[in-house]
Each structure stands twice: as C-alpha cells, then as structure tokens.
View 1: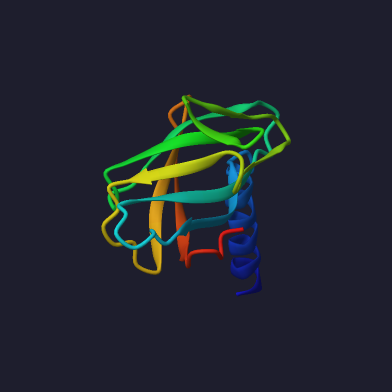
View 2 (view 1 turned 45 degrees about the vertical axis):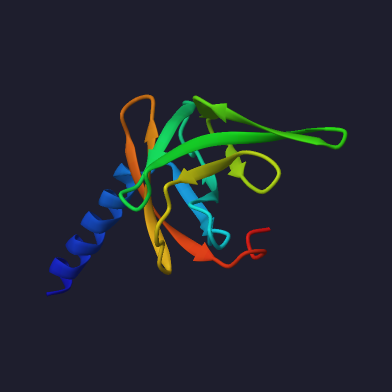
Length: 141
C-alpha cells in the first residue's frame, strides 16, 4: 500500500512539472459595469516562469461580445487609451494589467455574475482559461 501511495505522489509531482513553463495568472478581476453601460475593464498579473518570452495576443469570453487589450497614457490633463495587438511577457518576468496602465476592455457586457471565465491567447497558440472575479465599482484599484 505504501508503495502505491508513494508512486501516486511521485506521478502527481511529475505531472505538476510538465506545466512548469505555463504562464501563471493571479489577481484576475473585472470591474462591475457602470449602470447603463455595456463595457467594463479587466485587470490581472501574469508571470512567465519559462526561459522564453511569451506574447499575449488577445482574450475572449462567451460572456461578452469582444475583448481588447489596451494601454492608458497621460499627457498633462489628457488621458488616452490605445489598443494593443500584443503584449510581450519576458522570460522570468511579470507583467501587470492594472488601473492607469495596460488593461482588458470588455465590450457587450450583459451580466457577469460573481465571476467570468476569460481565455487569454498567445502567439504560439496557447489558450489559457482564467476565472476573473467581478468586483464592485471602486474596488479594482
């Protein structure tokens, strides 16, 4: 019996190593839409533990019409948003999508519930499903 348990533990440990190069997403959240609006924003942190850069190319969800990656820049009192076609996550580095910087714009939002699944896509064809918690207005800072 002991040998079976030890073998199972070893097998599970090896299986965990197989995805050691996968992107790690944390702090995933979407802001509840402003009443009367059908768009909102999403934020998250992504860590790339691999030895090679990974390029995020987009995101999608069945819960919304479209998702775009954007960045925010400020020039004096003028704030501008610009669509991003890709975001590179360097090898061994972390990239944040956060208020005032990179973020996801969600369009055609009807009802998000307590959370929503958003799938991040990469240039090499990876599809990374992530559960984003829905947070109230003002709680996304």
